[in-house]
Amino acid sequence: MSESKLPLTEEAIKRDKLSSDFINLCDDFGKFSEECAFLFDAFAAVGREPECITEHTSEGIRHLCYWLKYQVIGYRERIDEMQDCWRALKRKQ
Image (cartoon, rainbow, N blue to C red; front, top):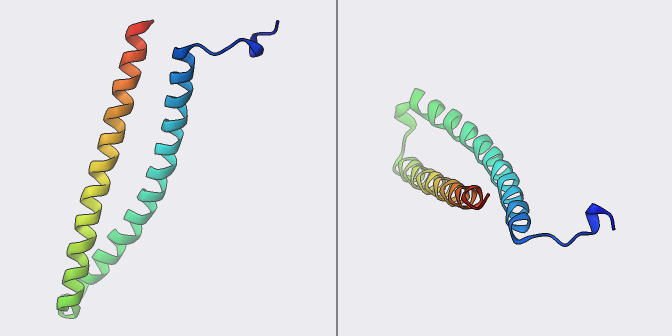
């Protein structure tokens, strides 16, 4: 019986899931990073012309900052969960 036909152990399944989660996190963070670069360029442009900052612009900036804050918190939580899973797998070895 070839090695690829053997049933996966619980640890192997968890390791595969963790690998998949890590790839998804990297992909998501790459997209988030691109969005941040665009937003930071936009914030810099607005900052160069403070007379153009209207109440609506100010509210939009506040909303985007709130969104950014909670995106970062979400990434931190995902990273922490993955680290906990990895540590648990390493302890079982």
